[in-house]
Figure 1 (cartoon, rainbow, N blue to C red):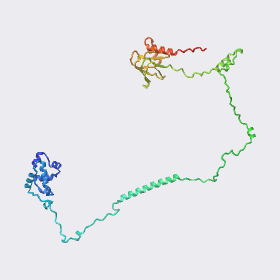
Figure 2 (figure 1 turned 45 degrees about the vertical axis):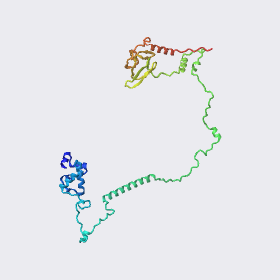
Figure 3 (figure 1 turned 90 degrees about the horizontal axis):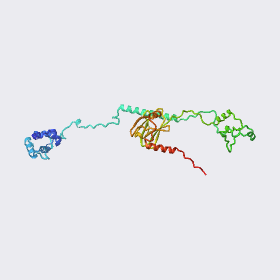
Figure 4 (figure 1 turned 135 degrees about the vertical axis):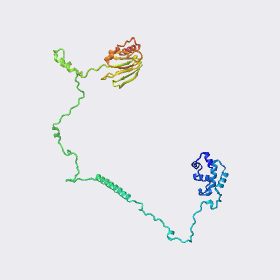
Length: 349
């Protein structure tokens, strides 16, 4: 069996793990040592199982094991099959020592046997802390809810009359003689004072005084004095055909970005620093400055970048638009001019 196990390349621990038999029993079977088994009744089963594991004939292997180990199969009811014999029991009739014969029953533990003094002290400190916190909270609550009444010299009385002037009686003649301001009476029709009254007061028959005329004109003037400077001219971006337009501030902030359709315009806001323009299909982008159209921004469908929208810079960089060079521009200008012509009112009969 040892040779077959070596052929398979198995160790005693491998056999123990796979066959579920102790390695000491496997070694005892290979050495034909019956004394290693606690119960001889299981020897036959162990030997046959080990022989079957090695691929040998179980009956032939067990017969050879019995010859080499001088082992005989014992009957199940025999004393040999039950393992080693136990120690003989002393007869009851033999004299015994009374101290040896006596049995000592363990004394039951008391209720406080397992209580440690340190735990008792910790528990007492915890109870004292809880009691102190509870008493402190109860004292604070009582102080908060306490109402104190301050003693007064006079007993409080019920005020029957609240109005101090309710008992004062004034005679009608005293009211009539009192010096009270008269109430203004509302007018049914407001009094209108014309603004050109001083000028209308001048008649041709009376000699004209130059100072009087100047004074009348000054009084009739309603225009407020100019307190702010005239607004700077604005730049208007005009798209004759669909064009992509993006207007950015000097700091890179995008102020306006859109695809302007044909005929749409965008008025550039007046800033401290002139914005810059980036536009696609720039051949269709024009600039309207002080009522005149300049441009285009660049020829063809190219992209114009970082173009300053300052009025002076645009007037210097571009020439007035040529209407003959762009038919769509000429049509736009014609429509704008036609809309600007006022329509004369028809004479009424």
